[in-house]
Image (cartoon, rainbow, N blue to C red; front, side, top):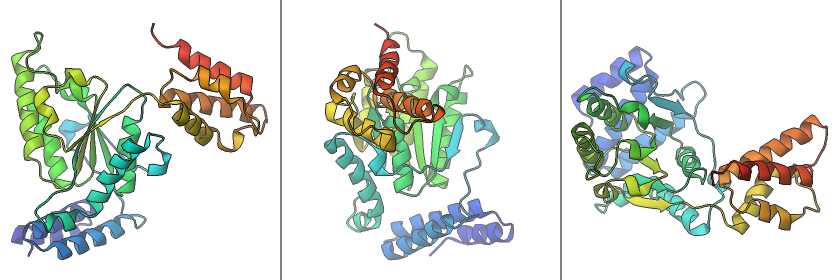
Length: 320
């Protein structure tokens, strides 16, 4: 059964119309029941909360402590898994994360836990941030993006204190928590330019991640996995590696982006050559730019020559 304090909090939040706190406490009750071996009851409580959150007017976003203002961005993600253009093995691993989360009570009945701590590594623009949005959307949870670079301060102990507040939120308010540019606080402890304070921050981070047992998903992303402390990797349940799209992925991505604006007789060979070194994000942006130009010129299709030029513009921005 729920603890006496949880029951009192439920009553107070209901009487004060604090919907957010009511949902949070109800999920804490579900977690408590699951730990007691009452998997069916925990599942029913989560289902009730999820249904209520989907009701217009009830789906509120998390309110952050004043100390974290400007460091955490909250949003309702609405990006289906089908929108991700990735190679099948990587898509299957993302689908596995979703499936395990949906069946977490069944796994807990056998003393197992679902994948909850995910590390995404790969070059910029290859789909890491979009993956976090997909996970939040598929699991019907809010997405909270932590601006990792803003967590780091010059005052001793302050960064670790803010990290503790973040992990308190992860424990108390279920959602997908996305740590972008993770290497800003998770750098290798043996690096020559490291300082004592950042080593303490990293040690705190390692402990927070390892001891977290909430129902939230922790998703961290980095463009530079070599900068990460090696001890971090074993704290994650899964490490997903992203890469620039291959020819089949690029064609699929362009077809998705252009949609009805794609000409029926499209010159694919030059488009494939021009997009060869571009990331997912760069191809998407070029496609959207082509659509905007077509709309402004009252055209129903993008012009092949102009689309090639837009792809070239993106490629020319690369540092050589």
